[in-house]
Image (cartoon, rainbow, N blue to C red):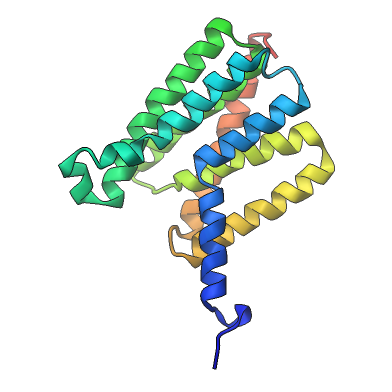
Length: 206
């Protein structure tokens, strides 16, 4: 008998895989940048701000995957090697984006890039120091969803909430993360948002 969506069929597998692919950090950052640019809410002052944000927050972190193919040692390590290199490229990209925002960007862009810098610091502390695994994917999806919800109001909040649970389901269904790992990553991002917004408010740049 042919399997159906309700019985855990290839259709469900494919759906989960598609959700995971479209919710990878570079795609989420690109969508967020597009929405913020369209909203014209003061995050981006010009198209250069948009391009630098995309390069630093999306393209540089994503460069880890093609770069890993150039290093035999990382290639042998498979996904673990890619994740380790992605952490490094993300640190470089986020730091560069934050530096640009401090030098040339708006207060809101400083806050946005600060969220990414603080997130990666908290993830490193959690995973490397506390030895409690936190999902980088769970962390990366929360920022764009929360920011979009704050910018576009209650209808966006409902949509973003639905998207979050869809992404959570896909991660658990594909066994990429456990529920505690995904939720820990999500909480880290929420903490980063609060810290970045709080510091920027204290500095009087929001």
